[in-house]
Length: 133
View 1 (cartoon, rainbow, N blue to C red):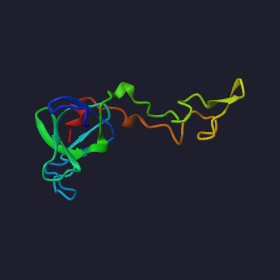
View 2: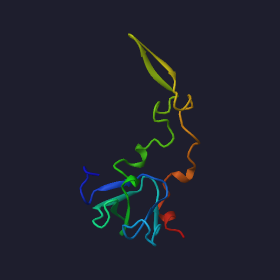
View 3: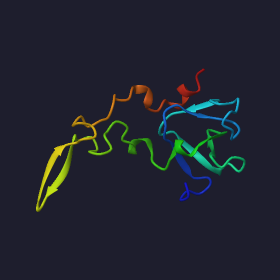
View 4: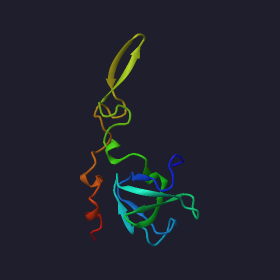
């Protein structure tokens, strides 16, 4: 987050990102607000009390989360299901001397994705639904 300035917009990266009111791992307020991937938030800087946490603002509410829950990318830029090696094609290119060809991706065995596809719960929930209790 070194390239971002305080007050700029960043995006939630992980599914069911739970915020805390104080930058403590065992804070009783854990999960007072749960956000989904792609939710825009205002970055307010690294927590002075605990450098592992970052202070964010969402619709007027202030909370803390870990750095790995934040991203510069919007949700549309995430490739949630594709294999990181072949980018979802199931094949990787290889070179033999001056020739080039394709082989089955050895990471995903040609499936184009690793593991099970993500459920619809992995996608952002409209903000009015997120506030339902």
